[in-house]
Amino acid sequence: MENPPGSTADRLLWLLKTRGPQQAVEAGEALGMTSEAARQQFVKLGGSGLVEAYSQPRGVGRPIQLWQLTGKGHSRFPDSHGDLTVQLLDAVRETFGENAIDRLIEVREQRNGENYALAMRDATNLEDKVRSLSEVRSREGYMAEYAATQDGAFLLIENHCPICAAASACQNFCRSELQLFEQVLGARVERVEHLLTDSRRCVYRVSEL
Image 1 (cartoon, rainbow, N blue to C red):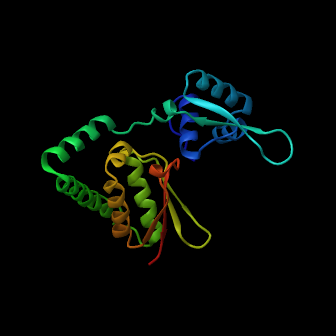
Image 2: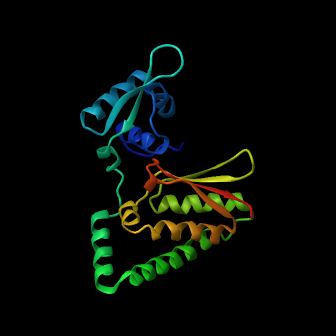
Image 3: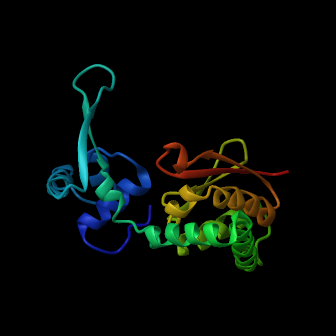
């Protein structure tokens, strides 16, 4: 994982956002600090209401302690003016009807498709395309990365959704993005984890047609 700039506290929050619940020893190893230093930072963040600890049984012996983001902690990663976006969507829907929302999504999809195609212009294979897409999605605020699977497919992993409020209000945004990924990648794309179904992130499995 590439550590973001900022304070130790910010880096720990980033780690929990991108990797999910962590033990202090795991967080310390990832960020190059001792487990005790990481634990002390987690305790401070817990005092601010940004993280919380819970116990998880693991085999024989005492349960392990894991740290995870709270709702307040997740809110540190912005949702692109979510409340305002939802209000605008509602206003458009009430004034012009559902077709106007669909048209807005179509225009957004077209513009994003052009940007993604430009980012992939030098890609020579599917992995290059997925890598390029993950890079441009990260610049858009999705905290994206990718990984190869043992069977030759790839996972596009988005640890944050900067339009989550809009997507919750109109799930056509999610359907549009899935179709767009298939189009620009020229591949089979399946969403295997989804924020709107209580996963902590969105993950897409990408494989050759």
